[in-house]
Amino acid sequence: TESKYHRHGGNLKSRSTELGSAVTGSPLTTVLPASTTVTKSIVLSSESRKELAKQAKVTKDERRAQIDGRYRYLISRLADGIDLSEQQVEETIISDDKFQLIEQFFAPNGLKKLLFFYQDVLQQKSNASSRPAGSTNNLPQKKLFITMGSTEDFTGTCAFFLRTSDEVITASNVSQEVNFGMFDCANGNILQGLEFFLSRIVIPALKSQQNWGAVKEGLKNSQIQDFLYSVDKFVGTLSSSRQNIEDKIRLTKVDIDTYVRNLQNPSDYITAG
Image (cartoon, rainbow, N blue to C red; front, side, top):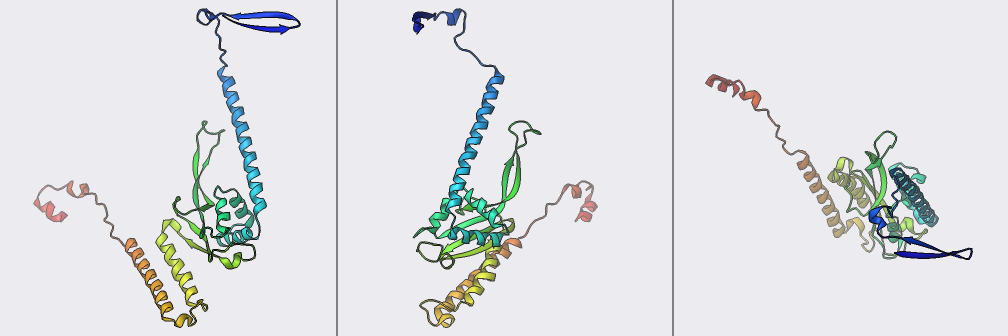
């Protein structure tokens, strides 16, 4: 027997609970109706979603406050290259889980490259009014996102920024210290996208380069000529590899049954041959 004492208005009251009642009669635990439990779950779920949305808004506002001339340079290049508005690019960037990679790219001795993929991504959409609870539809939708380039399949457009030195990237030097480029990988054809990028953009830019740093002779220098020859040769090898893959022999599947179904005698075999 467990006794609890409560003092109320100067009176001492006693309440006893017999352990045997759990076996012989009155239950000690009250079970809520199923509808009440579901209602509580829905309320909790709704409150959790509101809290997550509140936290996401705070994070986005903090990131938006960090945007300065360096970020504006990246945003404008992306908007021009991918044909999105600067507002769309900014909203995408501050919502990205890998937002911190941008600051790591700007830091002294920071990341050497910053990659963005713009391609179809499966988006889960649910409609509780028309489908059972928990059912979803996977719909492909174009999305711009930051990537390290090693975890997602590349099937669309890659926009990249490359550093030219280890100096800290500031609003005043970002246009000199950071190079921007893009190459397209439509339908997953990476070789064709890389070949186009090198042959139509990189090589013409190199051959028109006047300043080669410490090499005063420029394009007349034998080492520079050897370098350009090696790049041309690499692009040629890349092109040959792509063509070999595209022109590979494909054996057509033949329905043998249609040929052998009516073979009855040697003359039929000759005709079939």
